[in-house]
Length: 406
Image (cartoon, rainbow, N blue to C red; front, side):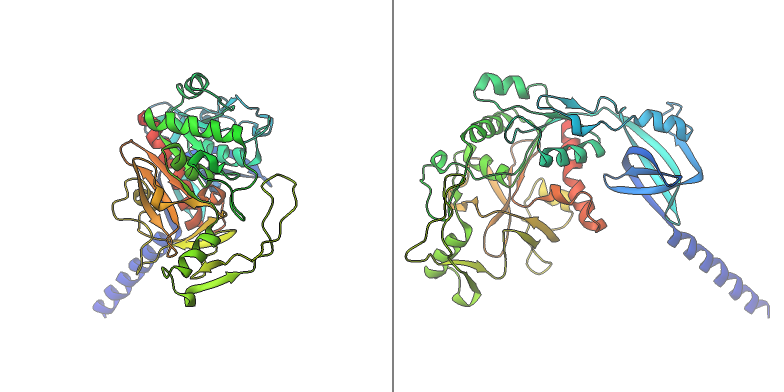
């Protein structure tokens, strides 16, 4: 009887501990962003994307001896989120926020029950490259919000047209983000536009992006380059581009590099005009344009390798530590051009490719942090899929970490 009693007691304790562990979660060393209120319930944002309700009796502990021992003091220390909609080119935003507070967050039954502030860090200023026109674009605002949530300040850069303007724009920054956009003028890498190739480029933006990319690499300014950004970095360092991926792959099939069985033809309904607003032209004869192994690059999502066939190189210096694995389940993609691997920019290393051998990421490994991706991780910072959101925010965290060391 005594043995049965002990067994039942042990089972009860074991079950209780399991239930307690299942109900509790701990997120360590995450940036706190803002305290809000919705339907009478206070919430807090952390980890770049997570929003959780605060328990009424949540405990606030400051291990930095700054005296943040209540929700009111915590809210005041985090500061006020800037009104990003009113931002203009040349503005630096984030001054309404305090230092970035890094904390361990304990949840029980999906409610925050304890916040341990473990570190205060300054917010490094990260510049977002100019895109077009005289206004801050919605894409730049999206990037800025991710940077703010992960512990930075943001400067919306104006265009630059010479080395002096470039120096003035970048010398006070701690990091740089060059976003996606239109095609690059093929004249910059010694080619002419061909049917389905480069269209609607902006010479002013090309000059600005090339100048700031070269300056960032030369001066070891931590940077992220995305989509067009990756392409322009390659061009800035003397490389070239594939002007049209489906046409390029079609030629490779005809050359025997890929099997016709792996190729799905894309109907040639005519090539768009290289002049904005111009009419499409009929291609005679039609061009052989294909998708290989189902990898549609524009628009859509695709995996970055698999466990059996990793898409990320083992010698990656920046991408592999961010992802934590040599593959990832799903990345967002929207492009018809890519880096030409046969014309790689000086000093760049290819660290990710798709099975159709399209370059997905390159690194300038001589610098402390210089990573360029073809995929759009920045669109997924608030994904409903927590793993994709974590993956997306990890890129911003890596840039900010490098910026803090500068």
